[in-house]
Image 1 (cartoon, rainbow, N blue to C red):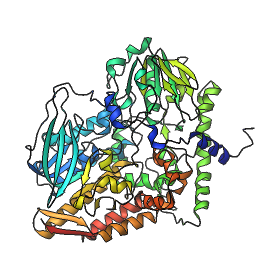
Image 2: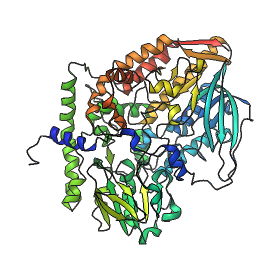
Image 3: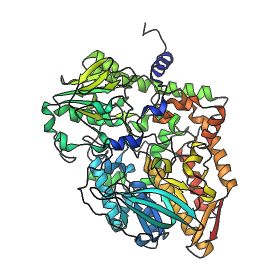
Image 4: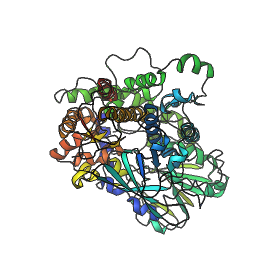
Length: 625
């Protein structure tokens, strides 16, 4: 009977199975996660002191929240442009114990970046660094973040193990209330006054755990992949020989982008491995390889501006431009998925009228690739029942596409078992293990590979759990939740002077985060230096007019229908776990104004670059403080 139903019908059935009534509430909130010890920093010893580059109650020109790549690039662009006269103008604050952001926390075995390293690692031209492989390991990426921090002298300016709690605008500066939480020592309140604040706190900030009943009943050990516990498994990030698992039954819960990388590694060592699946990922060929220094010199890093140009080429293929670039420079799995335009936007001329046609075109374009990926599961995995359960029945643009050459073969090991829950997920925990499909699976260790809070469900303030209060008590996350937070170019908002966001909302987005991060950082440093020239002092107040923000919000809303194909998707963090479909028309309209630029990152970048080039700072009001 399966052969007779159409692909659309099959997709619809699979989606219906997975629409969880609870939406985002099916996850534990982050305070509970903390109580279970899921968020402790495993990577620094107890008693690691906190450097205080600024005295308690002191001033700093630019305070950057986040020590990942966004924070690093923000600091570097401010230094290069003269927005910061020296590193002493900058303070970087981060709860982690070091630089790297998500690459600081994530050190699980098999960790790798899915985007080509030559365009993902920022500032390669400035550092002259050559990545070791086409797709870098997590360790190399973190070490590169440390290299950047060292090159630009940022270590002495970083206050680690420190949480931003509240930001309050007062006349001409932001009062930043911080909380230092040194490992194994008492907490301490700390205040800094900032002339300018840059929110570089990232999209994947807190680990997400399913709200499973009886979580505390389990007597074995458990941890989240973002806090991988090598003391239990044996090995280190550099040498993940997890020999302690040889007599252990291990569960990996989740089959998203993380699990794809973890499962083959854990599968090599565990006595038995059970992989619990709600929805399979679509897994195409990875084909990673070492960087050839000759090719690097003669074909890749050949001229000034090569990295920006290469990144733009990649993005043009993603957006399915009507006139594609002559050559696909990256020529990998991601750049060959023209239907990612449904998730990230496209410059094609799509209107509400021809939208159904466009969605049809997307699905037609998608089918050959999705068929090929489904066939790959059948070809690689010997047990055909397991192979079928590993097939992805949704268009490629619905979830993050995955690339791996060891994941599917891992299921050919007799010790590796797939527990497919047909979209339902696990039911509960017992003292001995996990209950799924009405059956108990006894395990010694549970590895939660369940991802992060949705990058689109909160403002940067909400994601970092900071209360940001602008003029007249306007609260950033509350405005965002109501669809009333309007940021010019997604960067700076009315009622929030001198505060810059390196975020997703109202900005252009592509699979390669670094492109957007660098563009926004260059925009911020341009605003700071131009404003200073205009008013003749660096004590100033910069704020967009309400009209400029409104107009930008309306322009963003005018592009939102280009992302409409997403509403028919299987639930994921792209669709806020399906919550997008339950909104009223008014909520959808407001949501449209605060969504991403629907005509693709390339067009967004052109708008911002032209705005910078004009140099008149249109839409911004600048006054001496």
